[in-house]
Image (cartoon, rainbow, N blue to C red):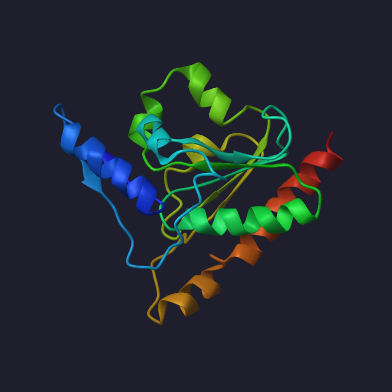
Length: 184
């Protein structure tokens, strides 16, 4: 089981899960980058990591987001930043932390649809190959990722070159929402 936590809180929950797991090996994939620790008074509890993916935050009614932004690991900070930009333009955003595809697959279909509602535009963010995310993105989708072999440069420069930035995530999400609004 692979778990890619987004912050110190999810890392603590993932470590506890790994220690308790008796059926299968567990791999925690951590980042070298400095990531913010999310305020869990504002965002959902990190213990929700046990479900594999969960609604980190949602604007408006829980049932009417215009777009779902999803990521794991350090990219969760990018979707949190992009959501702030989108909210200023009046977009209703659902943020989903998805630290373990395997654990999410093990949930009921009703739970999975509750996290990733059908017919809602979705954008996944991955600072590596986007391979695999298409399983979770659905119909009206986009994936911000690196579809080719990497590059050599300082980390921040490489991320900017590949468009793995808050501004690009917000721009791509807004394009999805605009398309969905135009098509009804």
